[in-house]
Image (cartoon, rainbow, N blue to C red; front, side, top):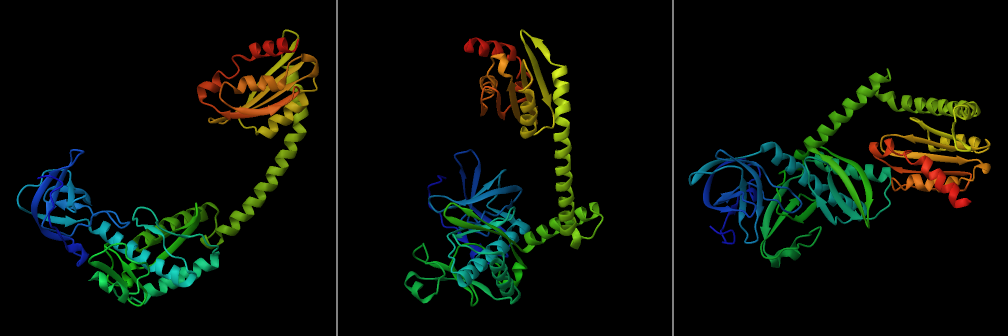
Amino acid sequence: MRLEDKLTTARGYLDDPFRFEFDADVIGKVTLPDGRQGVLLAETYFYPTGGGQEHDTGMLGEAQVVDVFVDDAGNVVHVVDGEVTGRQVPAKIDRERRFGFLQQHSAQHLLSAVLEDMEGLETISAKISIDSPTTIDVPLANLGEHDWLRVQDRANALIYADRQIKSYFIREPEIATVPFRRPPKVSGQIRVVEIDGVDYSACGGTHCTRTGMIGVLKILKSERRADKLRVYFVAGRQALSYFQNYYAILTQVARQLNTNPEAVAQNVQRQQEQLRAAQVELEALAAERLPLEAKRLVATAEPFESIKLVIATFPDRTAQQLRALAGLLQNEPGMVALLATYDGMKLALAVACAADTAVSASELLRKHLSQIGGRGGGDARLAQGGGAATEEQWQAFFANTRKFIRESRESRE
């Protein structure tokens, strides 16, 4: 059979989204361009990817259904990972996956309706997911935390009201009789998904039959995406999973802080204040220690031609600390100092050159950083910069230092 041949497959999932097992009549097989096997059925309860909702998975006989899609000719193709033998085989849909999509998709319709009703925000697009939060894109808006809580509370109130969710078909001339939230983009027969008294949407997806089946809806966050606002939420079992995960993290942190979950935020704030105070004290002590450290480096400097050369690396210094230390060394007669730190990904370099060395700190910095494509700036006495570097680049970073010093002196003679 050719993939472009038009076959008629009855789409049973439209009328019965809770049919998870059925006897499948095989009416055709196709080999897809990537070599995979596709099976066509007289009637299917497997949902094909479309409308922002992913496909079902399950079994056809002994073969795993790994994808379901509608091809360009309108055939519902069930992609399997093995051979499907016989004209009729038992079919089984992954119940957990389907139910997850039922909850998320119905929750999306409900939240979209509430956002439009309460905030005047029309849903531009949506992505239904059971492995990560579902998202809704709406026009940019300045909604605060209180606004989102109001929207969330209203959506959950409608869930607890256990409103009926039903689907039915209308003909194109009947469109004007249905108060659609968004005008249908399809023609011919149009499937309406109605949440009683709340929402009317043209949709070919699978849905719960009552809002109570959604369970609960939690808005996680919103963020700007170009000229849109993206809203992230979870519902149903996925919301429960999120709660269980977050609660496990919270209780673990509470144990580490030797407190209860309700007091975690207060304890963390107090520890942050203590840490900031300790950092201020450490920085003051480090500043007091700098002159002593500068003297130690001077004492261990290597004689090189007519200068005193210091090449020192530090595992845990900030760029600001390197610059402060280099600032002291630039006043030492005959001193050329290169101070660096590396954290495994990025390095920072500070260069100090005494006025009597005829060596330019900025030129030395530029030559060294050119080896890693780094950037920096400064003057003849003091320069600073850095960049990303591999471990190999770091190990060879100072291999040409003496050569660079000679070149710098020669260029200034």
